[in-house]
Image (tube, protein in one colour):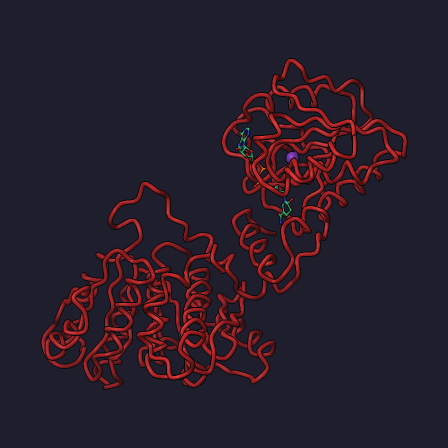
Length: 478
Ligand SMILES: NC(=O)C1=CN([C@@H]2O[C@H](COP(=O)(O)OP(=O)(O)OC[C@H]3O[C@@H](n4cnc5c(N)ncnc54)[C@H](O)[C@@H]3O)[C@@H](O)[C@H]2O)[C@H](O)CC1
Ligand SMILES: [K+]
């Protein structure tokens, strides 16, 4: 089962793997034509009704695979307003090859005659709100016919995620949908065929630029919309919390504060004027600070717990108390990770161990990434938390879904890159569900490392990654 957002991500990942959308459209249209063949013999009258999006594009392709039928194609709207190049190219192919392909701009002019089969390619996953004219009247006209109706991807007017329609919709008789079942179709009572359109399995398994699509920002945005992150770190070390905090800012968080021991606050502040410090007494985190840190964390969207905290017994006890009391979202990194297996918590944890830390947590690893991804999935399921296990291939799992990230390079074994990843994951977890945040952070962090090595060769620094994060988080440039 796949949602339309995830479908868009997978589609984008397929393109990055060398299978462009136009190729998928060709397969989709072919699958629709096969659906028509199951309903009627060659020679039958087929009315294809197409909208201006890619759902219409699929419909244009289908017409080309039905030359032995009596096919007519009606485009609802002007050809200039076709929304995508690939759909327009398929429309022009019909016109150039002299198919019976006409445009209808006024619903009063729509005359479908008396077809044996109607192909409904008006709207697919791109529908928003109730069908507008001329699609609304066309849907009613289609429902009034005696013909068999075959909808492309989803009955036009129906939301593929919910099965709901905000107004009139094409009746849910038969549907040819693509790649995987859609939640909204299960809610209907239609006869659904799922067609394989050649999306490689790797487009789902591996992270790619599609995993960044959900980070697009609406033009009307306000301070705070993209999240506030609290980094709880520092004490024996000062660089780690500073790196995590700066990374969270570069990954798009609006405000990042660092809760750290008084003894190192000035030093951490000294790394950057962009950081806001919230010091507590002493030189290491201990139980007496937990209450204050908890109330501070509650004012943030996500906490990043661990960078530079060290592994004193008193600190680990404080980490444990914090996690047992907290009920928000926490990225857990570094020394804080070892506490996770023993705790009961209502918090949502996104744990970012490397393989040594994973073993210390009680998890198993394997040199083969396929075997490792099964082990990580099983351990994530046991823990009930999201794991992002770092390695040449990072494995991200919540026990249910598992992704593998292939970006990054051997230059990233340098100190501090894990802190950068934890900070980025914290920022992204403000705006995405934890599994997606982890996948996008791993992808972008590795991508930033690849860019740094491409520009300067090996010898990269963790700070080089931070500078490159904004570009690495843009889905359109990759
Ligand atoms: N991997 C895949 O899933 C593939 C899917 N394909 C097909 O593409 C459509 C989705 O295409 P998209 O262009 O995103 O959206 P639509 O065609 O559904 O429609 C967009 C179009 O419609 C206008 N619009 C939006 N809401 C309304 C409304 N209420 N009334 C009227 N018009 C509306 C909007 O302005 C746009 O112009 C998917 O379903 C599949 O069929 C690809 O072909 C292959 C890969
Ligand atoms: K449709």
